[in-house]
Length: 252
Ligand code: FPP
Image (tube, rainbow, N blue to C red; front, side):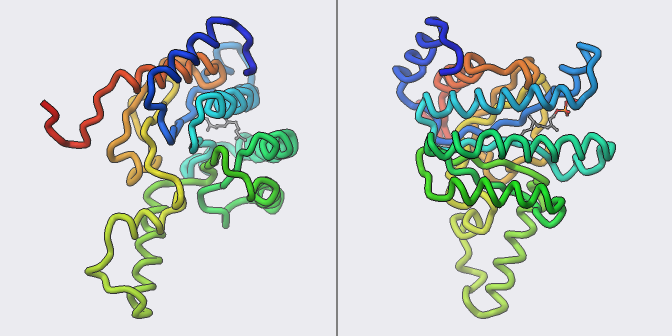
């Protein structure tokens, strides 16, 4: 645990005692720019601080025995940001990989990068391949890092790959079911998120995991991402545990 406070341990105990810990948590990490702006710092400093929250979120997931976590680190839409901010975010990705690769592998974290890699710079691509390679054999926690990611793109790419298989005569279009479609998405192998967290108070899903969050519980917190702590993560899970998940069924 990165924070040693006894209250944090008690919170974790409450989460574990709550029984149904989510198998998969997805997080829209938002508010880095505002965090920096409030302090008169360049936006880049917000992203840098946000990297520490990534570390805390992964640690918290390991503590709770969550099996999959998906973090929205860079959207397809983010390519339209100023070039210096994009360059800074890509440098942070390489820095994250250099700093965390060994520790993540030791903790049993398998990192998978989901998104359109064709747009990544050679250095960013090398970072992605190096962390995926170093953690490929791990299975305690799957960390999906969404980089250059857009959910509509992902859905289109799944539709194209299934269409190609139909044209090749490998499958019959009428036989395609939800499981086939889910297997063609970047997130194949991870179950749908039970819980979607968004920081900074915005009530949007921003082209993130649109297929996969069909039945996810959504927790929005005003907290800006660089301030997001293990405590906030545990509070989100406690909130999730208070929900009644009905998947469209009548239960009383
Ligand atoms: C949204 O905040 C955040 C991002 C676009 C980038 C997220 C990146 C990190 C947390 C650090 C890098 C992480 C890894 C794994 C390398 P925003 O800039 O849109 O904030 P704003 O809405 O306040 O402007």
